[in-house]
Length: 82
Image (cartoon, rainbow, N blue to C red):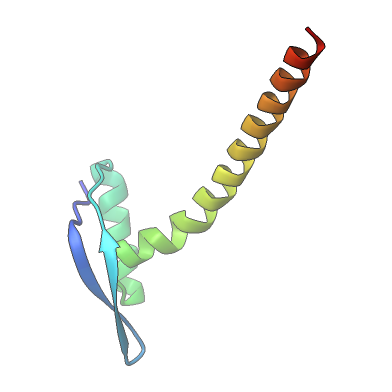
């Protein structure tokens, strides 16, 4: 489990910023791989996972919103015909 709660401090170069965090459960295999890669890169597991997940999830969110909006538009159009 990658359990990250509260607020942490991220170091990027010489700057520090607070990043709000929450906890999630991941398989131990994923956590172990994240730990190893994060250590190689010199970043935290949270920073690594955010770097990987944020772009992918943003894309998925846009795609799902588009599907939902299209379905709603079709439902509205069908309702208007009645």
